[in-house]
Image 1 (cartoon, rainbow, N blue to C red):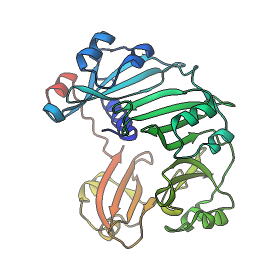
Image 2 (image 1 turned 180 degrees about the vertical axis):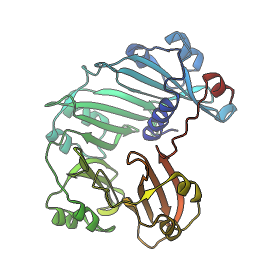
Image 3 (image 1 turned 90 degrees about the horizontal axis):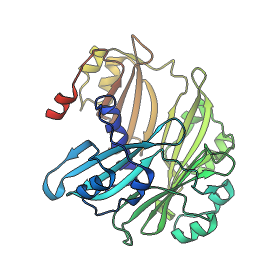
Image 4 (image 1 turned 30 degrees about the vertical axis):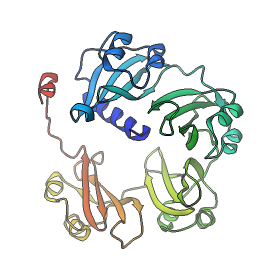
Length: 354
């Protein structure tokens, strides 16, 4: 069973990789998308829509074969809508869409959002808000404890404000908002750096001077997960964003994007290629001559599960970004965008043949 976050991540990543490589356009209407049911075969989907769709991802064989089919539709505004249908063993297990016209979706204000609590059943949420909202994804068999539905609402004061509720088995499991809370919660780079893993939210609030904007919440009690956002003065014209994650009331992770990274280290493609997965953090730092910009930390420092993400900029271009993820002080993952300036081409036929 795919959770919506993972499912959407696959959709977005595969869409990016195939963008511009497939001239055929497979279209779907909002009504057709709404009619597709969990358990349908691909033949049923094809018959309804009139085309097989674009296969953007495949894995496994037989009853464990996994496939994602993508269609485009007429979206709200100038952008196309994207609909993705996930199949396992030839049957629809999930569907999600981004961009269909949501003018019929329900409205919500910040007071209603704050009133709604994790653990409420779906009917109670709908009663408070007066409507179903826009159902953007569904996964699993309706009526079962594992059936997952994501409903979206727009802000009553601004259509740019988006609220999402995730129900599992009819019970609210997660809620999130972007733009609904219009408060201004600021943080400095120095304050961000001072925040320690294990701090309570009260300690954070005392340091920063405000409680921050709660952008997502899931679970209850010791498993309650809360993500709080602050803004700061960033590099250039953009604001910096700092995110602090709490589990059971204690800080477990923090990350930032946009704070002045002028002191961050530089790296070239030769150094990047030299660094190997499995190197310890001190060896990487010795080669590069600095810590880079520590953009995220999670877990307890000094333990085998402590995760640190360090970023560097390209020595030839500040637009090139390199990230290293260390777990327990050991390099677990490395990635680069714009550092390798080579041009590597592939045709649709070659891609299909792989």
